[in-house]
Image 1 (cartoon, helix red, strand yellow):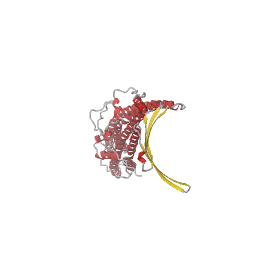
Image 2: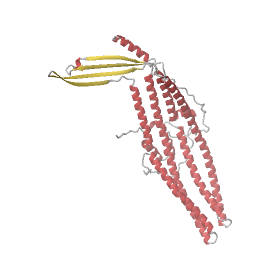
Image 3: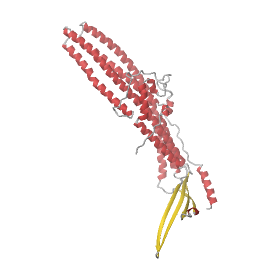
Image 4: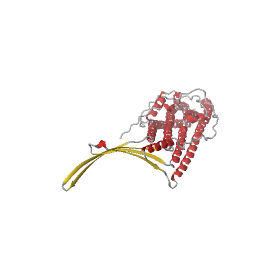
Length: 466
């Protein structure tokens, strides 16, 4: 074939490569019908995009900033993103011709009939190869990897959202344990005052030794709770320190001593808005698209592939090395004929993967709506329980006051007083735990609603020590 004919063939093939018969058929949103709204209406009050700022706690803000910079699991997510970006660059490189250089030097020593001949030979060369993307296979590989890279970024965003929620949850639990210890200390002081009263009445023969023993037993029960509360606080501090990328005994420098007030519900938006607010949904959608491009690759792989190669070489003595050039152009056409059904099976496999990814996308969306609804229903139930506990505590305090009055008048034994005192103590503890439950449930609600604040994550500099 003459050079002119080769040029015409090349132009024709380039034209054909721009008319790929295979394109990714992006899947429609075959989802279960989404509800028009949530079962609970959100408040109109706006909250900061970084929702934990609504707690107005400087130490919490500092802890989450530290976690977003130093958490080791988040660093792993960043590393996976860098890997995906590198893979994308590798795949994109297949759309460009490669170029390789070669250099060779040889020495020969010949001895014939007493004569010795020495010679040096040199050669230089350049070679290049490029696959014409006749059916869009290479372009589909690039698109598929781009979608996977974007999905990996969404995985990073999802990890950051979960990390912020986990840090906040641990911070709340630590404060609750501190308040629990403070409450126990106050209850012990109150119980001690009752013991002093009983002891005074006992010396006046107005109380029995059983009354004294019962009150001492009640104080001992309160004191027995203190070590457990302290140990729980320390374990929570260790867990939070590790989340921050520190050793367990690293000081946290917490300054908040009371649980924050629960704010009104944030604006909830519509269930359909979760499709953009939740990074896990966006990641599932992107992986569905990547699977669709993989199907395009499998289809195109069943057709012939054309690879162009070119090389330029020169060889000879060093003095005339650049005088002798050889140009070589070649077209290599490879067409699959028999493969035992491998390629057709690959198409079927990719179709099944698309079906799997579509189901995963649907499941992710439904799970997201389910999580929001659960958090809303839980808040309603917890609020009702809180109101009931507050009312019960009010009644218990009145009953304790009445029992104490009747006991001092000698109308009843000490047992009703002790019963009501222990009831008040338990209800105080229950109210503290209920307030913690409401706050942690609100953290869950913020997490499951997602958000776009992760777009401003601090970029981590990955250091590798070899």
